[in-house]
Amino acid sequence: MKKLLTTAGLVIALSTASFAAQNAGNVNGMNITVDEANQALKVLTKGKMTWDKLPKEGRNQLIHMMAPSKLVASASKKELSAKEQEAALSGFWMQKKMSKITISDKEAKTTYDKMVKAAKAANSKEKIPAFEKVKNNIKMQMAQEKVVNGLMKNAKITVN
Image 1: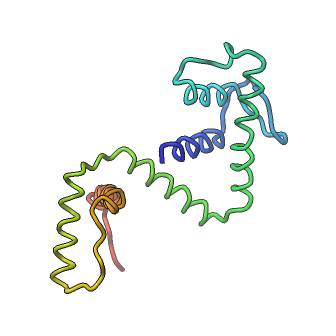
Image 2 (image 1 turned 60 degrees about the vertical axis):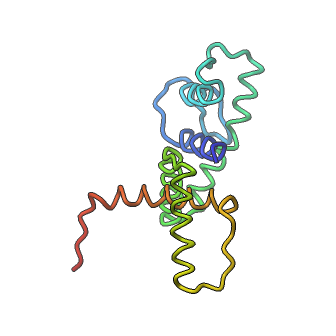
Image 3 (image 1 turned 180 degrees about the horizontal axis):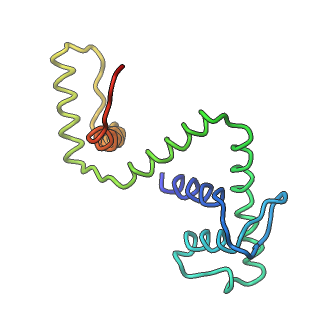
């Protein structure tokens, strides 16, 4: 998931407008600024390298590595409807928020035990999988619930 978030973050970072005067390169006429290159290098090298310090071959590799993100961002803007773009952005935001939430195995086990108890009380005929098989799914669901509950806490909802 961390690799997905890093890639998605890189796509978003590269698709935002930048006011840096210098261009590091371009792909299909879309400029890749020095600022964008430095942002990518900061992620890739944990801040150990900048565009100015990067040798020519490294610059070439970086621009070629950044090109797909530029192309994907451009294609998505052209081909996705506003509603699809909103859904993608919402999904990315949710993943980002969820990645910052830590759910312990103990918390997940407590939730699992409650689910098992509820299933037994309802006389469910479905086979209940072992905790280890569903632990990560339960943790993701719990993290999602925490994010949603945080949003709903201060929401002012009216029905007309």
